[in-house]
Image (tube, rainbow, N blue to C red):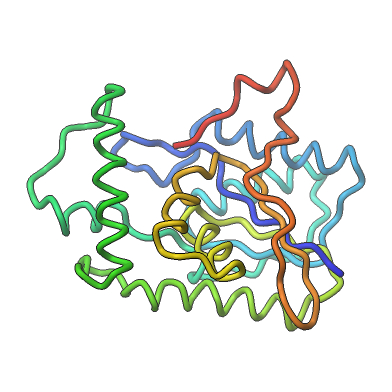
Amino acid sequence: MGTLHLVRHGQASFGADDYDQLSERGNAQALRLGEYWRERGVTFDAVYAGTLKRHQQTLAAIVQGLGGATPEPQNRPGLNEYDSAALLRAIHPAPLPKPDTPELYRHHFRLLCDALAQWMGGTISPQGMPDWNGFADGVHQVLEEIRQQHSGQNVLLVSSGGPISAAVGLVLGTAPEVTIALNMRLRNIAVTQFSISHKRLMLQTFNTLNHLDTAEHRGSITSA
């Protein structure tokens, strides 16, 4: 069987005007993952990524760390993240303060979890977003393409917490509240692995950071 490596993007710019940019630390995280794989002789037969800037920047840094020898990426909008700002506006139309304190940070994510639950349950329809079933179907289509075309191969996929947790939920058949909990626990540049066969995808590992598990790199672990 092959292996699908699903990678959440490196640390982006949470709290900035443009979240969709890797921070300096996020770029270093992604570069380190590529180096880790190169040190272990890992290569990829196919590469998939979302089209957001943080996905493309993460992939570029991974490829740099790998030494540049990867297939042309297949960019898929179905791997793009949900619009968290639209979700929050759907349940809290008034502007929120910048989450620049621990309490405001926790408040931001409590609201986001509430909005996600309502979106997944069909209670709200955030502006400019598909419904939950449409979002999950976009992820499902990419997974089916990989299963059908890359069984027995090593595949890299770079995306965000929402699509990756949706992918895990689809494979395991989890309830919506479990999918939300998985989403909230995914760390930056964490690796989740599925085995790939002609018949199915199966979960092997979730949210691992082996590439940062050294005294030199443990301080680089982030979540937002």
